[in-house]
Image (cartoon, rainbow, N blue to C red; front, side):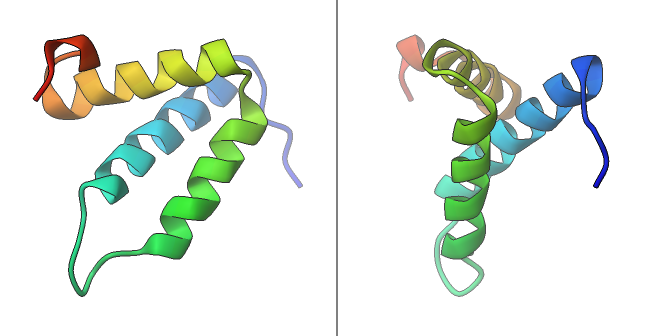
Length: 72
């Protein structure tokens, strides 16, 4: 298994956070609950609480264009 460190680890965490956010907004026949669940667990495993909040906020800004505190 590959070792993921530094910048690569940051990118993996960010990609997971973006994926989780996108999958949370997906519904219908193409919804992938198991992927969403597994990705969220992996992200939680790779981050502490403060980091998790940071990555989820960054994902929301990247995908939706605004931070959570601005609603929407």
